[in-house]
Length: 505
Figure (cartoon, rainbow, N blue to C red):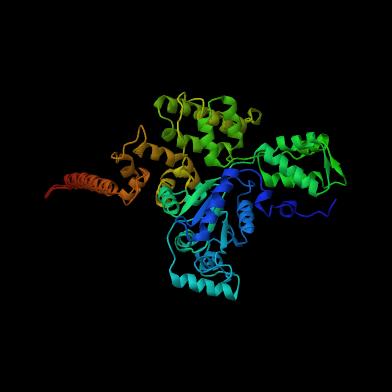
């Protein structure tokens, strides 16, 4: 057998003819790249979305290589602020091909940016002077002292997509990571979607996995039987990268062939936990209508039982279409919460396991009505540390009043207050200022509890009404206080000896 190295790189396809799976997606990419030969298409970028290991960036590189184009690749999880993206991608994309030759006028440079879902933060841009200064600093040393973290990253990415003269391909595993977890994620999505076309990738089919397994084993001069191929394919979730890595591990021993027993021995000792991203996982969970499907999906979602309970509790009122289903879901979630707390009392109850399963049922079989169309579960606002619902001033105030920790306030008390004030809640009433005033909150903080954006006209009107009621109540309290003070003075004066009156002391 050949010397051991990274098989995923050694057997990475270098031509479209070596690719397997996602045929329709490959055709769309090929057509889009062909459009660049005759000019600049309307959509100058595409966004490839799909789970890891399905070949998103491999397909883009292979097609570009077939066309004789150069590729500049950037991983957004490494270079994420405005200066890094400007230096690595924008300058090359807004000019002629870096490898331009007069004899090859139609030759392009493909800008490939992977893992854009790791770009966090908002869309606020950074001044040109700060970006230029940061780039100059980076030329002197690798430490960027001007821009930290993801500062200006998304804004620079939008600038790149708007001004590019070269084809740009973005890739991500979970598109909600790019849109963001704040309440204005829809606005971010719209701004990006004006400039690009989204292509969704699917996990590789069983036939595609078989073909790749045969090709890799043949290239490594390894003998195999059909049962061995079926065994390894049946234990793969459609992840091409994982398939090649599994083959490398299985063949790493000093053997010349593999059979079914060899594969099954590896599967039993190296069983892989396959997790599903929370947004697509919840969308599938809400579509399931059997307890067995719900249990499988609940286990696979990459959230702990406590986190999953919070996500389902938050999304049920917006996804379910009838109050009866919401009530049944809440009852199930109550049981899940009790099971979760049992971990502190009796580990024999396997509290985490049961809590996770009951939470999954609370998002599926409790609802007896079909949910048509695509579902869009949302991030629980009360779990966001920097959201308006979780603003530090409210949390600090509640923590001082109750004596509870800030994390307890954020996770346990704040959700109840939000439910009591949310305009989308069955029990909520945004015009009930009683609790907020008693807690000493400001009008803006009350609006935050209601989940209302600051810029909305109705929010400003609500804050004005709140301030008016708070002012009137303060005057009333002061008036009552003044009257009580007058009574106290009168009582004291009544107790004073009158002129000519003798006292015992």
